[in-house]
Image (spheres, helix red, strand yellow):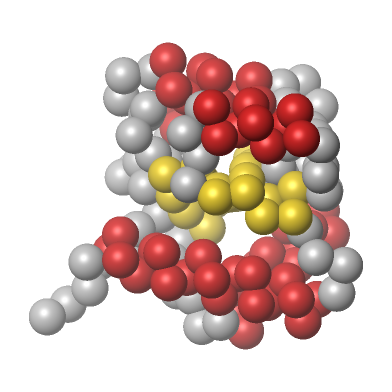
Length: 136
């Protein structure tokens, strides 16, 4: 049986974090195509116009310019064609209000960005298990 890899969208404004996600994908042997948007506005535009097929998984930062992660989630959940995409928040925000708002908008998980790269690799490995189920 041939597995079809799902597209993944990373919505992240910090170039170092983008690089860390790409490195963690490599270390975990994740072959899914990774698209990157620098903020919520750019991500919505990409989802509506340029990524085919539409990603089934989004990794989302909360603190971003132009449109933050919570605002992005509200737009995503209001869009009939995009509302069922699984979203994992990966952020430095440990604010209870961000967690509550994210879960109220049906995120699949909320992960605090670890301080060490080794812990980051472990966090991405956990996400890989979910993606593998999605791909089946």
